[in-house]
Length: 120
Image (cartoon, rainbow, N blue to C red; front, side, top):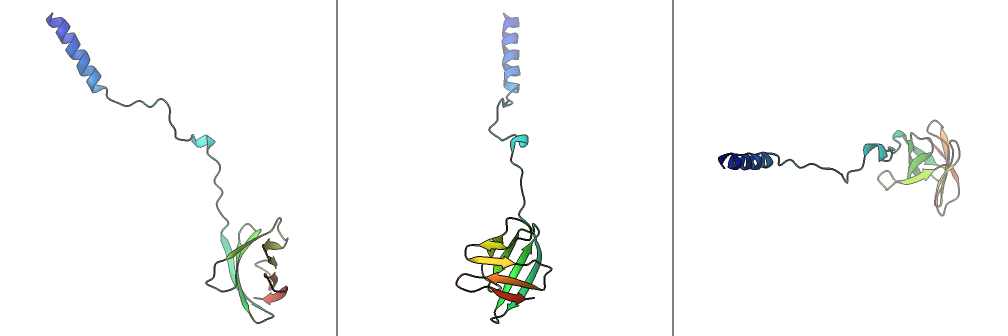
């Protein structure tokens, strides 16, 4: 009888020691199934241009060579202009930009204004 009590006590002690939680399935996504992360393009150049109407525009040229950020004033919210292919005009609703970071002049069209040339 003592042996039986000893076996039951030892079994209970072993079960109590094994309180580890074993996770058989997980809701966490598997790394191989996660979508590839694409970082946004970085700014390669920031230039201020003086236009024919004597206004200033600020352009942040981006590293993908397909987009630029346009600001009518240095501290205003930028408008993202994008092109379908490198060298094509970059556009957004009502905007069009022709040129690149290396060009001495650009052509910009803004909502409600005609196209005009601007020099760096």
